[in-house]
Amino acid sequence: MGFRLPGMRRISFSVSHASTKAVDVPKGYLAVYAGEKMKRFLIPISYLNQPAFQDLLSQAEDEFGYDSPMGGLTIPCREDVFLSITSSLNGC
Image (cartoon, rainbow, N blue to C red; front, top):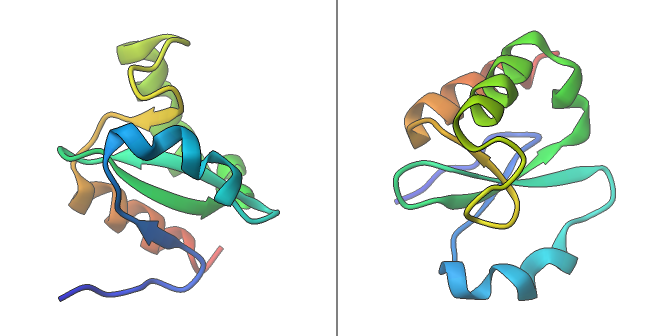
């Protein structure tokens, strides 16, 4: 059973399909990967200006530099933590 948060979309797929999904990002959104299974999430680009999300970006830079193993923006945190942070940003 899943749930959907307003302002954020979650899409699961295997890593081998990552390059084929790159064009499936709607205007105004950014694809990021988070969680142990590296699930793909579509987040509004407005999140990039939020301090809580900038902290996640700093963690990603510290862990991966600018060479992510997923070929996209990978956030190094558990899925539940990522969902908690992004759900709090929905009101911003």
